[in-house]
Every structure is written in structure tokens, then in C-alpha cells.
Image 1: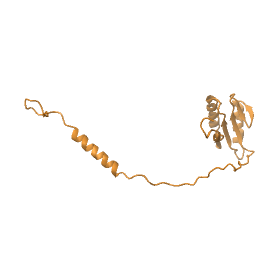
Image 2: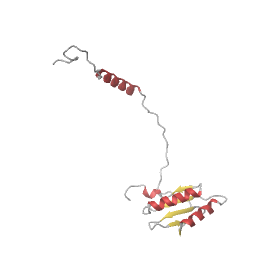
Image 3: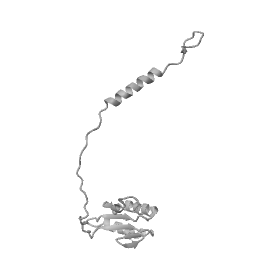
Image 4: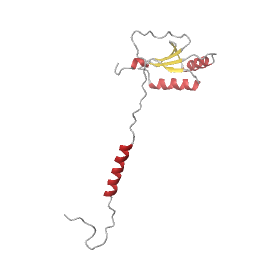
Length: 143
């Protein structure tokens, strides 16, 4: 089998042979991969393990809790309220000397539209102490 080095008329080959260039690039890539140090450092942290004997912390009476029901109701500390009443309650709690923590717990069947609307109202009110609660119910999939 003969290799073609150009045309039969003796003119030089005008195309560049890229095979050696690709070989050199692959060798350099392998060399860089080999010389990169492996990240082997780790920080061991001992996390607390929950036990079934742990008692839940006592409920603080000055916490406000917003629950979204499956029937698209907004519940403020267990009482159904409207959007305007929610804004009034948020402004009143923000005006207290010590702002109480606002806890947000949407039901798993509550609509996303209601959740987004309530979260936007909370954000626009300027509440600074805010937290999501009840997520431990969804710790395992398909429950």
C-alpha cells in the first residue's frame, strides 16, 4: 500500500497533516491529568443523631405560624384569614418591640400559586425573622 505525498505530477501537498498535532495534544492532556494533585483533604464533623426519646422543644407562644391548607386557605395561628388580613398581621408583628419568628408551613396538597402569593406578601412586608417548618414530614420519599 502506497501513501500519497501529493499529486502524481510532483507538486507539493498543500494540506497540513494534523495527526502528529493531535497525538501531542493527547499526550499533554494525559500528562496534565496525571500531575494534578488529588483532593484528599476532608473535614470530619460529628453531627448529632436524633433519637426517638428526644422531646420536642417547648412551643414559644410568641411565634406566628402561617399554614396553607389543601383548600387554599391561609391560616394564621389556626385562624383563616385573607390576604389583606395577612399583610395587617405581618405589619403588626413587625412593629412589635421584639419581632416574633414567622413560621411558614404549607400543606403538601396546597397549591403552588397560593404558596408563591403568600411568600411574595411575606417578602414585601419586610419581615426579618422567617423560617420554614414541617419539612421533616417529607424526609422519606412517597409517604
